Structures are given as C-alpha cells and as structure tokens.
Length: 67
Image 1 (tube, rainbow, N blue to C red):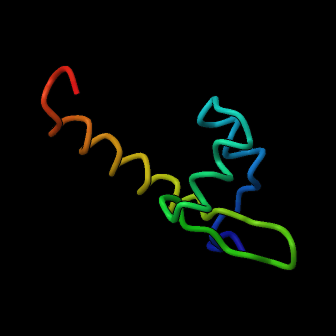
Image 2: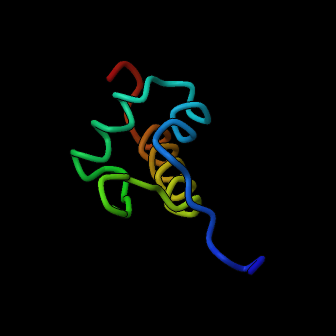
C-alpha cells in the first residue's frame, strides 16, 4: 500500500502552507483547491496540493509587477 496517494487534512494543509485552517477551507470552497469529501471530512490529495502550488507559482511569475 506504499503507492496509495497521500491524503492531507485541512489542518495538515494549513500547517504546510503556514496559513489558518479557515484559509484552506475558503480555497476549497472557492474551487481553487480540489478535495475529497469523506463523510463530513474534507481531504486534499498531496498531488493536488503540489499542483495548486505550481499553478500559483506560475501565476505569480506571469503577473506584472505591482499587481
């Protein structure tokens, strides 16, 4: 089972991003960060988090300075 995708809780994602849990919940609610709903829990695939970060990095690199 070592090939199983790693699932992260909202708290774990918040710790990794160094933001509040509410910020992660807002990103999920806005559709910016994909998640899996298991019952009432929302879990984020590690690969989805990495893709989210890569997307944010490319957006920042392509935006004009001062905006």
